[in-house]
Image (cartoon, rainbow, N blue to C red; front, side):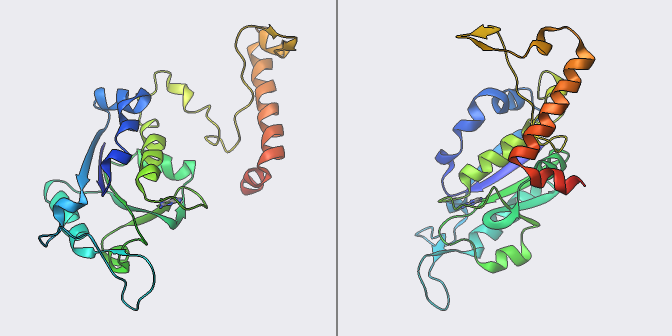
Length: 227
Ligand code: 6GU
């Protein structure tokens, strides 16, 4: 998979790719991640990437030309399955969307800033708009790191234990059950006995029961969605 990220502030987002699972995935060539500086595609001498909004009002708008130039340049080399614009008014990211995106070959991610991009970018250049939740970030970079992490860990072979992504919260529509490790008793706080029983089918039953209880208590909407 190849992910091309278009950004005004690469410093904001490079380091998450340099540690842990994303780093390993890149080293193992399961994914290639490139950063493209939008300012390098600006047309005038000042390398201007934003401008005042037509109709007036507060805040600046990201201009269409640098974005179009950058996307066009990228598309000269390869065909992209998705060109994603990260914006708080996009479709909310879910595990299902991440699963779908993890099966794609090439994607572009455009990080928004200021008041956002000229609407014509959204109407004509991109294929999908994603938000990572109902709150506003200063720019799309942190959202891009979140989106990439959620996708990359799902690429086959990235997680050592193939089954471990399958037992994540949300992957089966439920929150993950409680987990424990040694010591079995810490300050009198004990690990549930069943987990030390060695009875795998009973342990699995317990986990499923706990996952359902937890989901009902914290995220009843997830259970309703399934019914
Ligand atoms: Cl994708 N971008 C920004 N700027 N804020 C957000 C977001 C994205 N998702 C949630 N808040």
